Image (cartoon, rainbow, N blue to C red; front, side):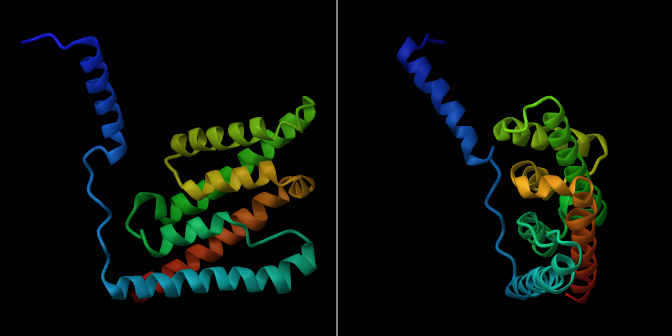
Length: 188
């Protein structure tokens, strides 16, 4: 076998490396039937609408904490479109999101104790990476849980809520979304 020149070897190595960006040989996500997309729309709309209504008319006026946070957008995609994915199952959703909130609150608390509460980049990085580890240990990987941890880490006004954030929005919001998903996805 002939030896490649250093420049050709470097090009081959770069080609192999960047070839991994193509998805490791996986094909594109299959296009779902239109009926699936219609049910996905209905479920996502209903879930976010219900959270929004509860946020605006019940939770914020009553206990002054948010119920509708960005992580629920990602959760809606999983619960109503990727319904068969392991990360979209009820256990993963409920546990994974709660784990993200608990980790986020704990990391922020530790950073405050050690005087690093202004290092948002470090707080965010620790919150997300420790959430992943905890989710993996619990067999409860749910990507929006990482977003939930990051939201708490970066949203300074939420820091005063401490563990209330675990209950609302993380747990209550996830329970509402899963309940709606169970209804809509079983009708589809």
